[in-house]
Image 1: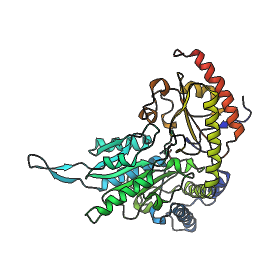
Image 2: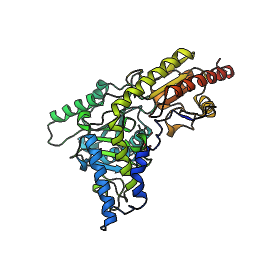
Image 3: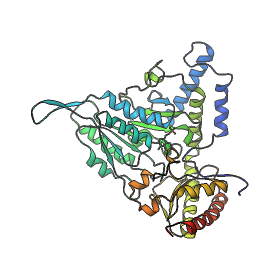
Length: 407
Ligand SMILES: Cc1ncc(COP(=O)(O)O)c(C=O)c1O
């Protein structure tokens, strides 16, 4: 067994950066005030939250008032989808028999979204929203043209992820944003008709989060994916987008997300995002080199293995392989025994033997579908870690194949 455990599951979560912990600690100890209190301890907490909001806004190129702190990516996504669609009243149209009926509001997502979008969208569908799920191509990329074709006169919201959590593919969000902007500009109505949300949870700290560049109206992030703490998220909501709050109570976060603020989490989230942004480009290049080295070696040294998702247009730390004829879970257990942490898909879906909905959407043949393993690299990953992992993986795959009924 490797003396030091090797963590290759950064898409599931990242360790808390020491600088982030240091920034958070005062708000868990002496500065424990409630940001809603008038006394100095309360005001100190409030000031820390507002500074965090300004810091995040600077990175997202938006106004501080456009930032809402939430409990994570799941809540941000739910708030975006339910929040936007609940404010829109259905448009009346005429039926064949002349009677008026409500034409449902239309939502577009993709088949490869995270469950936090898929399940929220399906819930909206149960409540009468018309839902279209567009497909990705076999490399896991969504086409701008397909999004354009799916837009109908009653489409109100499009939600597409910036980067996929399983295969890391990066979607053409800016190009889609441009198209949506054009549709809105050409629309005859005074008010914006069509809104665009991106789930940028996997892209946080890695890709450019400039919301003006991306041309999005809403954007979700989660601190634990960029070396912040679990349980803190961000939703960017562009000025002018009406949002119906999903959690009602004391009116915190401009009345859009009630509940006593997680001051330490918020302070840590802003600190983590700032740290990540400062080293983003350098880290991207480093990870990309390591990833390409890892992929090349695995494809060369292990027989009957394929890389899932586009080989270049993907997050720099993401790799996802399918090993023919064997179960991903068996590989994971053996890797874990060797001190290597990886994943067989999204963490939320692991533990189930259902094939990944993302790989299934890519129409990967059945015999490959169950043998998928995701290795996601991060700040601490070294070439030695990867060499050790490849050595162990070769042996594990070979052992499992001798036991496989498909051999
Ligand atoms: C793309 C994507 N969206 C949303 C989420 C959910 O974020 P959280 O864990 O903060 O609820 C995740 C988490 O894995 C994710 O990868």
